[in-house]
Image 1 (cartoon, rainbow, N blue to C red):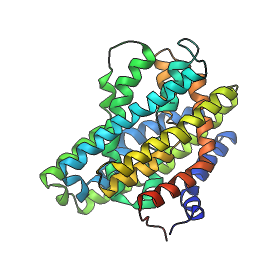
Image 2 (tube, helix red, strand yellow; image 1 turned 90 degrees about the vertical axis):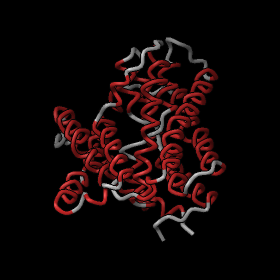
Image 3 (tube, rainbow, N blue to C red; image 1 turned 30 degrees about the vertical axis):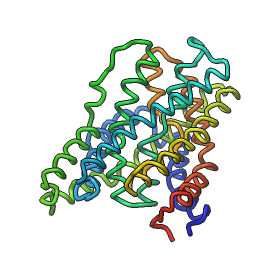
Length: 317
């Protein structure tokens, strides 16, 4: 059986890349003015190529029921996370205007991209990654609909935010798989897609680490926000996600996705959303930093317990 130590070793490269990004920012190798251009290339070219490379040929996505379950769980589990975070925010005495909405969004949304995908690929390989991208359609839909309405207090939904490189790549990939055309994307074209995509996550995680060190230097921590975010993101929400993986009629690859999702810290997207929709970015920053640091300890154990409880078998010995 897999041990917690083996899980630690498997996910350690991700955290070392975050630290490396932070060191590159501190030493001036990776400057602030580099971030926007690099991330634009990642989102518009490298990440879509990575997604296509994993989806094409993924037999698990040939089932319409599996695709629907993946999207539905992505949407539903974000809603459950938002509900849990709202309850904890209310219990902490946060109110509208004092950070309740921002805390709800920040603590309620787990990382579903740059940290989750390399961990999932290390543990279970390409099929699970392909299903994660489908799951993320539901996540994005929940964040940019319910999340925006909570944060802004308005009913309008900026659906145009779903029209981006990764979502377009998922749509194209699913269409090719459904039509059986994915088997024909081979040879030099497939190799180019692979080469463009392979560097997406190492580079993105470096930028994430560089961004986090800058945020840490500018925000004054609040013990209440830190404790509340750790409670939501690293204890209560993981319990709900693992229960869904245990008791719902899911394929094994989707259970694998949910185990990794349960172990993830808070997503960074709510920081941007708080800036766009009148929230309190400082609270979102604290949630992200606290849960990311906390996940260094919690992630291996959540993955380990999830694997044992669900009876999964990782690629690791």
